[in-house]
Image (tube, rainbow, N blue to C red):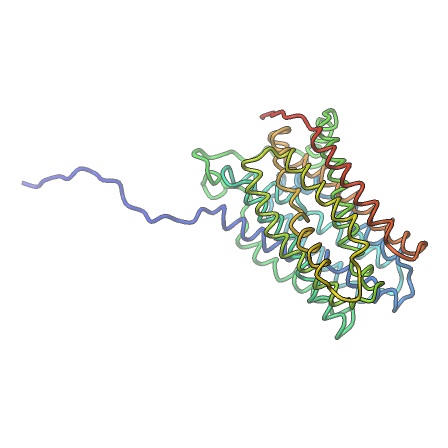
Length: 423
């Protein structure tokens, strides 16, 4: 007589959730696109020396880039809903490569604006922080804050870690070698995105990480209509304007001012460009620590409080910076670099969390609009600081002004009321 044994559940070895692979590819794509955003600070003086263009003219190209980088972001988030993350990101990397590669042939300032400003602005804008918000919202329920922090830190740190490499290439082989390096780096990431990135957990039959049930894909309505509809709803709420105002100041005090003008400002005081680029690379290294820690805190602490503290500390550090510039990287400057680096983009995880809390499923697109204000502030700071330097002979007024604005951003952040909207 044959004995029938009761069924027992099959043992399966634990597998890595696909969300982590998507997050890893997203990180690589962000770092690949970060190369160009590191380029302007290194190339301002070489371009001025070769073509005789004023700093204000070169900074205007950076401003166009920063502006389009921000304004493209909400539409890119909606396009990802419509056509998929993989297609949008692959196309964006090609735009970055084209814009950077074509700069080696330019002979006039309008071509600089077309390549640096328009092509690369559109490309990098399609892989801006709304890209991070889309990936984390779709693929993660648990660990959203930490993953947002890692991806944000990776993109920003990649931008700054590129600096010493690009500065060395520029010093040894000229600025065109740096532009070609960025072009090749962006193109090298495209196959990775095409083969490994997936648009939504439902595409592979999985729930998001930390969820127990599958989540349907977003409704494929027109990208422009979805982006503008989210904006029309958001602008009726005070929280949107408080977040947008604070984030505009965030952009002015990071990408627009420090990211664009720190190296020329340090060079004004006799510091070699390669040394100044290395200092910004250190900002990137400490930014990784600060932003990941900020993501961890965002899962546990009131995001409004975090933003208020971050902006207040950044403002204090910028008010001190003008007195720290010297021919060498002395200990006081290193302390500033460490302190400022920890706070560089620590504001992103709590800002993403607040958009998600207040605007529900449209949170990533609303964050795209908030991020657009970040880049408007960055664009304004980039060109304003260049004009200040051309007319006053130094950057001191720009540093002091940014410090005061950061204190204002801290006040705006703590004015946000706690409110959660779902759906």
